[in-house]
Amino acid sequence: MGRSQAPGYAHWKGQVLNSDELHELYEGLKLNNVNKYDYVLTGYTRDKSFLASVVDIVRELKQQNSKLVYVCDPVMGDKWNGEGSMYVPEDLLPVYKEKVVPVADIITPNQFEAELLSGRKIHSEEEALVVMDVLHAMGPDTVVITSSDLPSSRGSDYLIALGSQRTRNPDGSVVTERIRMEMHKVDAVFVGTGDLFAAMLLAWTHKHPNNLKVACEKTVSAMHHVLQRTIKCAKAQAAGGLKPRPAQLELRIVQSKKDIENPEIVVQATVL
Image (cartoon, rainbow, N blue to C red; front, side, top):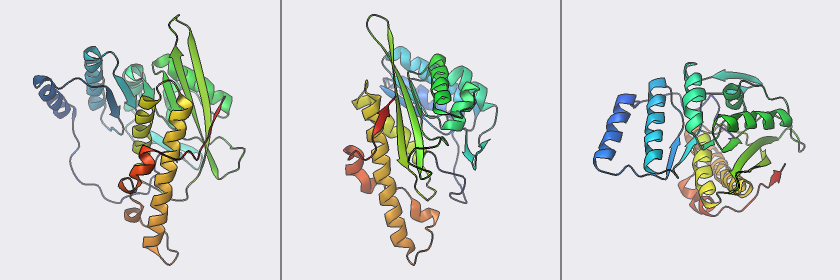
């Protein structure tokens, strides 16, 4: 249920915002004194100067509001049939490692991206926990590996996601909460699942700042409801048992408003 795989839409149109344009928009916000934010969320980016500009803006916004939470989905690539490949230029990786991740509070890599950022491979749950600790040491207090190819005890129809959250106590001690979730795989390719996951994790960690288990259960359960509704609608549109086309697999987000606001918990997280 992590990020959508390669086949999606065949065509893309429109403009891509560059770093100068981003800077200009931000200057406008500053001039109008509307640069007080509580959250910043970033996702797919192909340009390293744009990424560097984002970091400058986040740093400045954190000076305005020290409680600002920056949620970064470090979209760089994925694994297909066990082989990982990057779908952004490779020169973005050092920018993520050296500049972006250190200012992020919450990151949502898939397994391949977590491996890229940490410089370590994941072959077991133990290795995944070590990787999450390495990522914590780089900056973020909350790390969620949104999908992995680790084997599930429930069988090959299940996908494992892992989360880790560091909380600092008033006395200076640090407590780490770690969780595992097993999610039923959906046999379809969606566009935008990673964006939805990161946005909902932002919302649910806001509601449950010190309870990663509940935040992740609500995020993943809402995802489940959205994807089930989407696949059901797509199959009805496709009819005759045909495989739904990408246009029929548009996420039914608006139709899932109630499930997003108050999801029935259908995926339980295990505290490790």
